[in-house]
Length: 330
Ligand SMILES: Cc1cc2nc3c(=O)[nH]c(=O)nc-3n(C[C@H](O)[C@H](O)[C@H](O)COP(=O)(O)O)c2cc1C
Image (cartoon, rainbow, N blue to C red; front, side, top):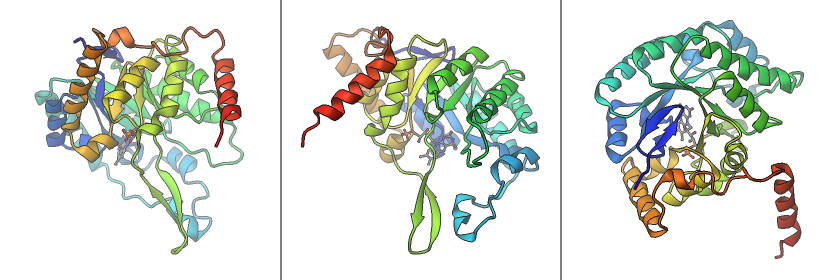
């Protein structure tokens, strides 16, 4: 069975990538992921604040107005920042490259155009095969126009592209006014992969202690919905590879991602719940399903349920939306 695929120009033996998480923060765990069959690793993120905690731009963008009222302090957690982390991250890459035989993708999380971008060259020198940019930014300033926020993302990508040669992917979010157009702009600028999507931490309110809390909620297969939608829309519309992330936990989920048009998937929650060995089971079940249905390769099924052949994907989406709401009975 041919499970091989290509992602960001990297040849992968199968479509399952272990996503950025605590699982990809230790050499031992990364080795276990490789042994279980992971085709590539995205390391845990190194944050701009850890690289250059004196950057003034980050203060301007992220912490403006954060002291306004005490109860909201949970929305703006204090961070202990250390440059030691960034040195350690580079050492980790060098060490891992000596023992891994699968591609290692570094994960850089930032937003400003500050000095941290030069750190991208160090990631390349340390041996990273690719770089995933996670540009997480919640535009809480009511005066900040959408086009300025979009430019922030594009500028960050452009700056990193100008300093490295390794392929870069963008961990996107689906809350742009026009995610497809943002995808096109990232693609045209030179991004080689798009991860659909980032899963921001969730906000809740602790009504007993009267404060805001931020949590990471485990995903389920239902959470794949937006990723499948946009993968199906973007398939064959852009040159960059597509990676469905969020909610992928079983071989059925991998199949859905491929059929929607993705080249790869990233898994985190399922691996944290079931252990690294879960990848072995998913791959085994994937092969069994494909054999039963007489598929011979992943390539053969890619995009088979995409919107590539729809002349008007927006009308198609709206038509389905209307039909589901009007036909619904209880
Ligand atoms: C505990 C935890 C830590 C994470 N750390 C990072 C990180 O450092 N950088 C990043 O880009 N994403 C991080 N993520 C997000 C995951 O890479 C992934 O995008 C998200 O969990 C959705 O995939 P899943 O549904 O398989 O969990 C983290 C997720 C979890 C659960």
